[in-house]
Image (cartoon, rainbow, N blue to C red; front, side):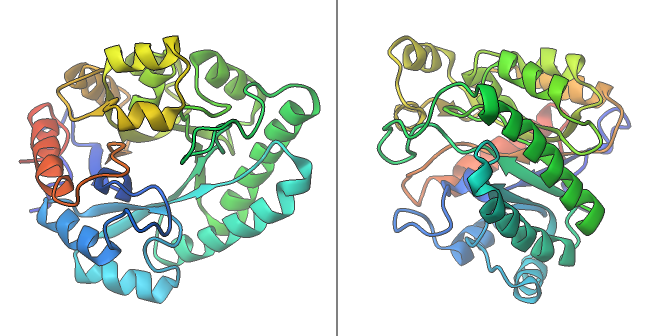
Length: 308
């Protein structure tokens, strides 16, 4: 029996999955990261069977090879992930070409979603500022127009639904940012990847967001953040990478949100949802992810997400 769904009718529309972030992977290639074959074998050992592939190029880009290795370890691929600049018109061609490559591979292996990760305004390694904090004027208009445009390409040409992902140190971070995006974009093409950890980091309440945007929540990343470290990070204006290094991303039931309350709120939406386990662990001791993920999965099963 698959452990991905709980058999209790209340929770049976929620499907638990995993992605490379749970194994400390942020980049397609990085010497500090666990090799992809090791991570894949450990993900299967930890009891997962549903996969979001994470940074494009960490796992094989070729659709046949990707399907072969995922089949080998018993995984169904439900989503791909991509970073892409939407707010600078001169970057559109590059962003479009990249997402078409991601979409082609993932449509071919039967995925349903593409998660759009917004570029960060501070460097992921150094924390140095690389862009303005708040989008304004033409950049804001370009962001909205290109989000709609990209979502339409993915849906109409590849049959894939795009979910925008809030992220620390990005232009979709706070509840106000998310409100602004969803007031301006087309719900046919632009919906939300509810990343519960990043919403906490951005000062929001994921449970409240579930209730506020029931129609726009298409996909979920489930993770927890330590509220004291998060507060210190904002009070002292740390870059997100420093907050992660300080241990901001924690294994539930530690941190916020309250996972029972969250899983109940997701179940109350009464719709099919993929709920993907994540924990920002880059970089980490390679011995950490497997036992950490097993405990995460077992805890989430105890509150209705998946089976023990």
